Amino acid sequence: MTTPAPAIRIAQIGAGYWGKNLARNFAELGALAGIVDGHPATAAREAEKNGVPVLSLDQALADPAIAGVSIAAPAEHHASLALTAFSAGKHVFVEKPLALTLEDSRAMCAASETAGRILMVGHLLQYHPAFQTLLDFVQSGQIGTLRYAYSNRLSLGKLRTEENALWSFAPHDLSMLLALFGERPETVSGGGSAWVTPGLEDEFRLDMTFSGGRRAHVFASWLHPFKEHRLVVVGETGMLVFEDSATKPEDKLRLYRHTVDHKASGPEAVKSDPVALAFPADEPLKRECQHFLDCCASGATPRTDGTEALRVVETLLRAEAGARSGVMVT
Image 1 (cartoon, one colour):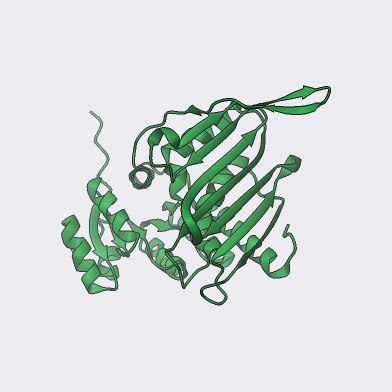
Image 2: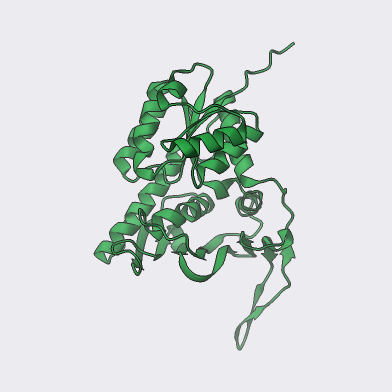
């Protein structure tokens, strides 16, 4: 008889705005071992809610029964917390972005490899079953050669004061787009405007070019009259739309088989009705948390590992450099 693998136990570091959602999911998966938070009231509330103790960081890292940590802290603290956790022999899940600099990002990847521990980053939409269905469609050639894609991540608020719309919103979109195109962008450019907090762009537009003239665009803003989370993918023989902001499941993922009729008088678009594509109804965050636990148990490489997250950080930095210089960054 095969001996079952021991249950993976996780300490949640940071249980505020987003960390409380991670804590809830790890608790529901039977993996939450404790809450670490610098605000005692927050720590006590989330610990009681999830039936686990409040822990100090030192207690969590010293406990041999705790295999890993989930970090939902301000991005400037990601590297220091992750490096400390790796030094203690823990697996690390860290919210996006991986870090704010390439130096810190590379140090985290190197520490993960040296420690022989998992590094996974919370690029949540990679775990959305609708996006996974869309990605499978593209990679299996069902819409032909990929031509261009764009992603809008727009809403009114929450207004950030510590990071701009590019760093707050676009990591999700870049993670999806880089997975779709499967390569490093040849050029990146971008620009935005700061209206609320000086120096922090409330809206940001990013453009990328890929081999073969393929292009991708991201528009991120928290000064928008309505919520829109939409990814559009245009291929040679079909088009896909993933609209995460749609309220009905049947409206979230649609396939369009529009064609172009090349007549003597010129090309003419031939429209078709959209087809709703089915996908599992699983909660993306629970899938993400389960994936981390599975990788910790098996040693498998996460879908959004440090290398994947490093590519996203590099693209963000190239976009900012382009915005400051006014030129495309190669």
